[in-house]
Image 1: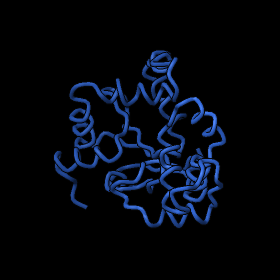
Image 2: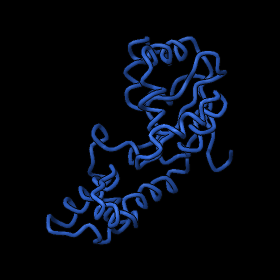
Image 3: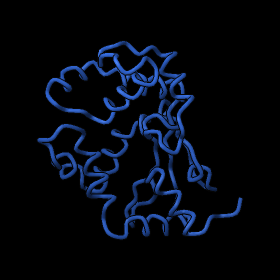
Length: 192
């Protein structure tokens, strides 16, 4: 396989962006629903940023560490260029994968979150609830209440009909061009 150009690497990074800081011995990759919260906490701990990340927007709903990851850490000016340069100069890359069956079941369980009714009553609508509403509309029709049960078979049928280009990353395959680059080391989360 011919190594991609810096422009090609930048395109790959827009699909799923790993974490990296200059001087750290490797680029860390993962997919959503594959240990992402644990892995980003571990990475930030090694960088000395975990306390700051966990304090970020703590009063708001959601995982503050992921908000910090995306809104602060990866939003730094030049982050993608530094990351692409690291990948282009063969900085080692480590990727964690999850058993695909366990991962799809985890994604299914996410759209069946038992707290969605409470969140809806409180006026909150996290992204997973929007996906649930979308699944309910597409699978069962417009007049189905939020608490209507979504079966695993119906979820899988819905998932099979979705375009990967627009599908939420929590429901997409955990691979792609970036994950096929030479030298990347893959580890199964269940074996780590």
